[in-house]
Every structure is written in structure tokens, then in C-alpha cells.
Length: 514
Image 1 (cartoon, helix red, strand yellow):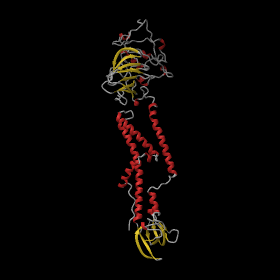
Image 2 (cartoon, helix red, strand yellow):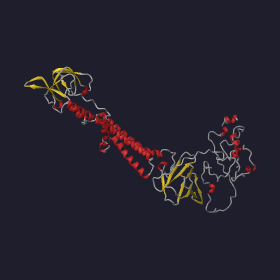
Image 3 (tube, one colour):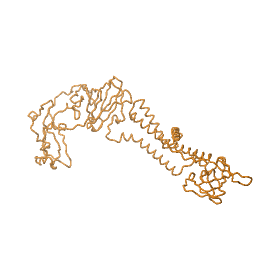
Image 4 (cartoon, one colour):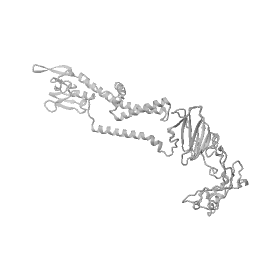
């Protein structure tokens, strides 16, 4: 007696091998187009393969590094292969089950009762179930597998139909009633029955199951159609969002500095031929940002400032204020790419580009310099010691003159009090008009000023680079007027704090405690 084959394991070696082969076969667009979601992923994979190949051949990293693009391409490809593998292994399992059912149909023995004239005897002939024809009568006893579909013509039995219908509880089938039909592949648990075959070969319920499992076509259910439409819609939305990400990233951030309208990630590139002399014109088109410009590894020669030719000055770095223009000469040599680096004075960001012998190259981008700490001198108050009275504001100052503390400077040498500096820079004490004394709308004024044309500027002092100073700029032509100034007029630019003048504020608690 043949034993019914059990269902094959999901990850049986033969199934997995077949599924892996089918996973690559299903990469064909003619197959994947039936699944819009996976077809979209395949298009993305092809695009990434082309981008990765372009980066590998040209070295252009504007679309990310080679390793990053290889990783994205591999992830997309594995996604498609995994989806194909899941579908292929389901198909392979179905085919294996169909083969198991077919084998069951062919190997199940049938105890055929042969007639002698018009009479049936109890003598039986054991044949294969595949040899049964419509009208044959076979005998089944406890433990037998019913070899074909038929009607019980004699007897009653308890039958296990779980292998076919999935029903776990046994059912009772008997002759002469509406419960007399039996199905091939089920098992007799008790008693003895005679069954007459009612189907032609190839038309039994088992044959129909085999055809269904082997992939007989069927229409999708409404739920499957709705889910397919939903996933296709989500895929379309995802594509739109991904396409819009880069433009939004480039232009949504208002603190991204641009070089010729290109963000740092865009890698604006200017071409040069090795050894040639190149004129670069830096124009600060920002509204109020100061930039510190340098080209690491390349010396700059300043030849013009704001359209006026000057004696050439060789520098490593220069600071450019809003609306200023500098013309510099450079001679790129020794490497194929140089970085144009312009960091803002507050060290919050930078604009950058590349000078290169061809497109696609990019030199290393330097890190931002440390943010500088402003001193009293940077704010126009001398060296700080000359105005220690700033910290004494509100301690012993009469409320009638809220800015009297600004004038309470520490004693200075006589030379400084007369406007003569002890060093190269000349410091002078400005004359404050009566309109500034006791005025609650003035929040700050300087009691000691000095020319600082030879100062590199905040954040540029002692940075190890030769920095352009205003004192370095000398016009190529003499002043056409030639006269010395006849008098001097001081213009004091002060400020105020609307709604909270100093004269109405209480002294700082820390200062009062002092």
C-alpha cells in the first residue's frame, strides 16, 4: 500500500535552487511590468547602475561617492531579487505539490472487483489508480486511500478528507443517500465499502486540483485589485517626492551660501590649463555677509580692488565685504584640481567651487576655521583696559547720566590722551558732542579709536596664512587732486534700544553686588 506523500518543506534544497534561478529569469521587463511596484524599482536600479558606471569611469563624485552608489544599487537589486525569489519559491512549491498529487494519483493501488457475467465476486485485482475507468468498481477497507472519485454502492465508512478539503474531522459516507460521494485521495478510517468510479480519466477532483496548483489562470479578487492600485499610487507619490528632494534641499535652506548660484554640493567648476595665468574676479553679492576667501595650495595676487588697479599683493587669503570686488591672478600648477573656499566671517557656513583641468574633479574641502571671540578692541573700544569703566556701568553712576560710566576710563598715558599711540597705530580720543551726554537713546559710544587698516580682521589674526590688509592696497596712480585736507569732521555713528533705554533699566544684580 502506497503512503501519501507529505507536503514539501518551504526551503527544501531543490525548491530553493529552482527559485534562485527563476529570480533572475523574472528580471525580464516583460515579466516585471505586470507588477508596477517592482517594475519601478527595476527602473531605479538601471538608473543607479548607469550612475555608478559613470562615477567609476569619470571619478565625478557630485552624485555621491562610488561606494555609496554601489551600496544603493546593490540594495535595489536585492529588493527585486528577493521579491522574485518569494514569488518563484511559491511557484516551485506549488509545482512540487502538484507533482506530489500526480504521484499520489499514479501510485495509489486500486482493489478492482471484476465482474463474471452479470455478477460481481469478492475476488479483487490490484491495479494502479491511473488505470481506472468510469464504471469500474473498487473495494476500500480501513487504512486504504480511495483511488478515484465515485459513488458508494455498498457499505458505510468513516473517511478522512483532510488531505483534500482541509477538514480535520472525519466524515461518514454511506450508500443510498446524499452522502454517498467520495473523493480520490481521501482515506478510509473504518468499515468496508464498494465504490463505483463516476469520472473519466483526467477529470477527477484530484486532476482539477493538480491543474489549479500548477498555475491555472484565475481572476484577481476585488481586494487584490484594490491593493495593487493602492501600492501603485504610493509608488507614484514616492517617485514625485524623491525627485523633488534635491531641488528643495538645494534651495529651501536660506543659509546655504552659493558660488555663481551653485550650492557646495553642486561643485561649480571653472576650467584651466596647467601653467596658464588665470584672472579671478571675486564679487560679494550678499546683502550683509563677509567672506574669507582662499584657495588651498594656490597663492593669489591681488591686482585690483573695486575696479581700481593696485600694486600687486601676493596673499593666501582675503576678506571681502558686502558689494566689494577683488581681482586676483593665480597660476594653477602641480595638481589637477583646487578648491575655491569662501567661509563666512561667523564660521556658520561656506560657499565653494573647484578650479580643475576638466569637469568632474574635486579637491578636498577644508574645515571651517574656529569661530573668533570678539574683544573690546574689535568693537572699537581700544585695548579694553582703556575702558574698564564699561563694566562699572550702574555701580556708582548717577542715574541722571546713564552713560557717565563710558567716560570713566582708567588713567591713560599722556601720549594716548593727546591722540598719539605708543605703537604704529595712532589712537585718539574722540570729542563727544553735548547731544551724546546723558542721552538715554544712545546705548554705546567709543572713547578711544585707532586706525586699523593694517589689522587682518576678526578670526584672521595669526592663522598661519598671509592675509590681505587694507593697508596693503596702494593705487597704481597718484591722487589727481593732490591737496592735503583742510579740516576734519567727526561723524559719530551710535545706536539705541527702542523701548528699553539704558537710563530706565535697573543695574545688573551682579554689578550691584560688586
